[in-house]
Length: 223
Ligand SMILES: Cc1cc2nc3c(=O)[nH]c(=O)nc-3n(C[C@H](O)[C@H](O)[C@H](O)COP(=O)(O)O)c2cc1C
Image 1: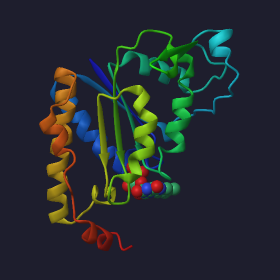
Image 2 (image 1 turned 180 degrees about the horizontal axis):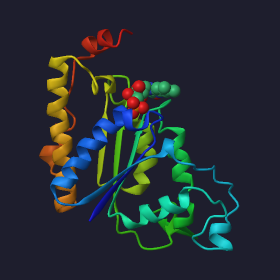
Image 3 (image 1 turned 135 degrees about the horizontal axis):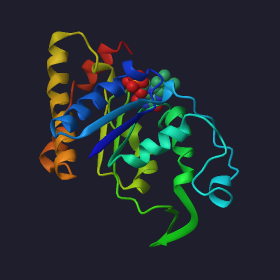
Image 4 (image 1 turned 180 degrees about the vertical axis):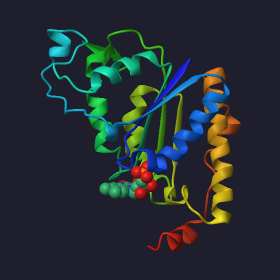
């Protein structure tokens, strides 16, 4: 069993997104599963050219020679695939979107209709579980709506949407204590995901915990 995170934050290893991803992965490791944490910003990933060679001429193989060759193998080898990104302009970052576009060799040129929703068929039957991790700078959860809509078609097993993300790396002892409590819940979610392939309702509801009141947070970030 292996869990891989593809983190699209431009801040890479130092990102708030990575604070959550690392907690999740440590729970996965507690369940004796393997982990890998990929920072897309450090990778050479060109933009999809839309040539569809990977469908019609060399099925499953992209014309571009860049880091996606290795990343597609890693994607395929994992049982739990996690897309991680901060909210940038109400959506995932360009780095994660670019990576997602380059996954097109994993699809086949066959349109499937499930109840009026048209999508592409996977070239191999999908057995992976899909997890989303995100954080945003504002309070409230409205900033995650676009990402939720985009990822709905992946039927995620778990989505972790953390508002008030600026608190995740706070040095303030009181805030740190609250964040640590939250990260313990994220760790538990990783553990449950790796152990039993789903996360309990109890853990899911704790993931929604408030880190700080809205007025205090607005004051904290000085806006
Ligand atoms: C270009 C840009 C766009 C952003 N857009 C939003 C946004 O639409 N909503 C929001 O709540 N935060 C937004 N933010 C704030 C980030 O989501 C926030 O700083 C987050 O904690 C960064 O996470 P990271 O350290 O993982 O990159 C934006 C930040 C940048 C730099």
